Image (cartoon, rainbow, N blue to C red; front, side, top):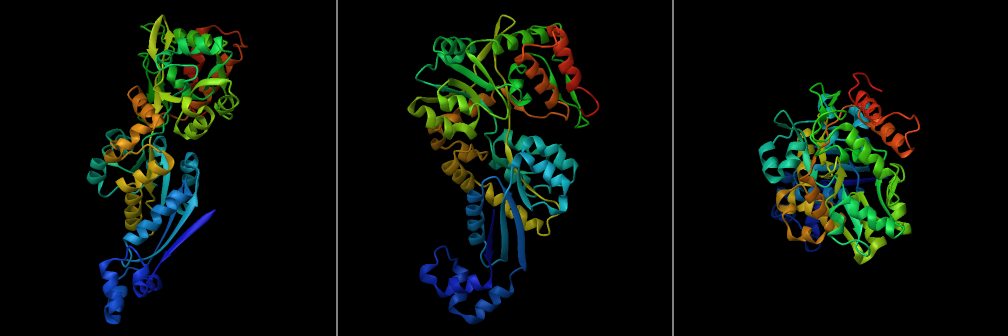
Length: 425
């Protein structure tokens, strides 16, 4: 589906002729309407046609922002702006597959930043200081490589936390996973999370003292999750995950199915997810819907705060854009304070803009407060190519009851070997 916005001489002239019905008309446009000579002079000072393509996850919101941008800059140029629906998760692969056919402005998750910069796709943000000062520190960090700001912070809610049904669980109950599981089992219900995804699986390894990250080459990973010494070892985590997946109060959702079927049919009373499922969870649990940071879980005889990957959605400008300066103006407009508040009000998306994030309105949305609270225990997702498949295979093996019969150390050694492999699996 595509939508196009046009702004040109005809629109400007009609706006002047119909001044009584053209709200938002600028003072200069009104003057042009009163004097034919001034109108011609005004139009002749315009730039040519500014053609831009915008890829957005939410076409309706993006179109509204584009419309207000065209109105704001009426008289400066003739605009031909096309808004197209795009799946942000696929941005990197789509753009790198054909850079010159990519949109002038596009949304993408922050973990794709390194690849897009390496591919020469992104035009540096020209007013970096201004944009940095206007947004949350974490969001700016997520859009920055080697002290250079390459994208515009757009949202600050791309993380996960705990949803829970207050009909069964109190705020005290959801502080520990042990208690959640106990209550779920007692009531014939489930606590659920996507089990076979490295994105969610990280929750068991963060905050343990073990290390993981991407190497300086931007491709391979370092990882010592199979450590045999320290306060928490790799085997400790394998055992904790095995206990969880075998618990009668737990349901291992798959990445394809997510946690929502259990929420909707009433079998799930607590789950790990993000703001994208808030509407569905509120519809299922009504006034009993609650959201909070992740609980602690038992590992090596200790209570360990469950960690998370935290993320941000960014708006990038294509370095190959024919009108790169106007593309930057539009990207800055779409991510300004006014439009981040618009996105929050219409879609409950957590803003990256500092002023918007401090608004009292955000305190009325439990999911936003939960993702903010959990971010204290999370890290930016910066992973190399070989992270995902080994994590999926490891988690699926545990869920299947370890059919290979490997001992816990062997299982975690295999996981780490896959994550740190120097060639793509």
